[in-house]
Amino acid sequence: MSVSTAYTGVQANKEGSAFTCAACKATYPAAQVAGTLYVCPGCSHHARVGAHERIRQLADKGSFQEWDANLTGTDRLGFFDTRAYVDRLDEARARQQLPDALLTGSGTIHGFAAGLAAFDFGFLGGSLSTAVGERLARAIEHSAEAQLPFVCVTSSGGARMQEGVFSLMQMAKSVSALHELAEAHLPFISILVDPTMGGSIASFAALGDVILAEPKAMIGFTGARVITQATYEQLPAGFQTSEFHHARGLIDRVVDRRDLKAVLAQLLAVLAGPAGEIDQALA
Image (cartoon, rainbow, N blue to C red; front, top):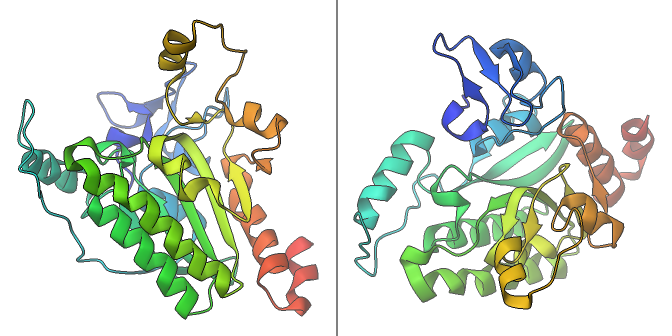
């Protein structure tokens, strides 16, 4: 599974052998940045990565088995703005090597089995289409049936405007599926990464039994500029960052990407693992 510079947020130079941090503009060898999971070695800026790379970082090597690989959506509304929606879909599918903006499946995290889902912001902003909603709901249902905890990494702009009300319906669908997981007494770990906005944070992403977030991720229903224009008020410093939400009790922990897999294993050991494995995971 490869990661493309089109959606990492890290820019390659002309030779393709180095990467430039989008935050501090420092340049590093490509292999070094890949080794730090696309976290800048200098300023610790967390670059955006796609769904394939996210699964590669979290799932044990060779353990991931994709669910519903052939599930794709259609253009029910015949939507056209400056371009046909179907053309945008075809372009995103070719670029991101995904049928839509969500990759789901099962795998292990340091040996602990889980259902896994990862949004890809590079695919039309990781937005909720009918296909994304269906893939998410099915992943949650598959997890419940297999008695697996469910882990979801969300990076999404919210509802997909090209699908109108069909997109908004996915909010209710995902929440309903999570109810089945709760009925099965299985944990849902929600991981919020930059950005998690709109209908995603207004539905499933905020319902985790444990909610983690990467540093300085933008999280909120609508953008700060829109809120400022609507309220005529100056927003507080750091508004809508993961640290801002954590300080107010809306997020359980802000976790550096380089520590995320280990933290997930600890949580899975406590929430879903056999009692005898807890000490080993916490060691």
